[in-house]
Length: 302
Image (cartoon, rainbow, N blue to C red; front, side):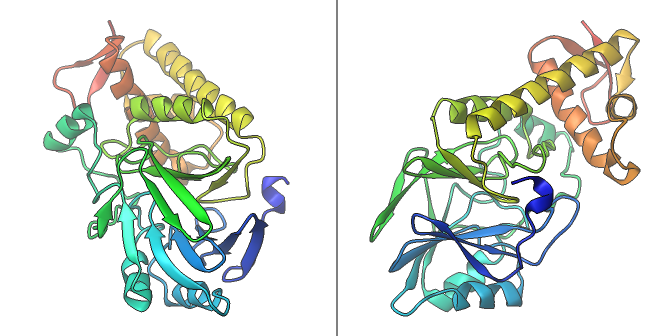
């Protein structure tokens, strides 16, 4: 399936096999593509993964997807962006199910990103859900079980510090860490490129058969997709270093030089990706800011 072929109808529960169904939320955008994928796992006791945005029609679609004898017993959230987590609380009120996640927004930040946040760097409109608070937290490697299924949480920060993937046998629900239609946005201080690359390499070693992501179609060649994502980021790093060889520059200036193949409206997001690379390179002592470290700093090669 190509990306153009993926165009499911929002609100319709589609059977993906092995006790997994997908319900697409009606929130298409430049950052969510067709919308957020909500997954239902289980034949009697049902786990909902990523309930999605706070949308009454999507809540009704999730509840309407339940068959006779089915009950939602767990609500699992990969991360607390507004297209993934806000419907968790309303769904919990309707069903009595507990909401599980790594932690509230801000949990899982690296020391470097915590320092950037303390220095005044704020998220740039990607949509953090400030009120997200799971009923119980899931540690890396912790399992959640229901009748006929066991989901294991894997802490995979990078896109967001509190990002989790969930494995079910040889399939993995990857949230926004790995998607088939686009690479993941990494926007400091909540996005961390150093963590993102480590999470991708960790997932690469897991040997999964299929990924079900937060947006887009199933990824049936997960190792190939991860290899592409890692290489893509390495290529971006090389392009940023080439730009800096021409002289010191800001993230904005580098983004305009490196991202020449995207619409102008996407340039602010590209600039955040560049900033993530610059912070990563600074942490590796490859570059340094001219003056104090900030999102507006001019960077130079060491």
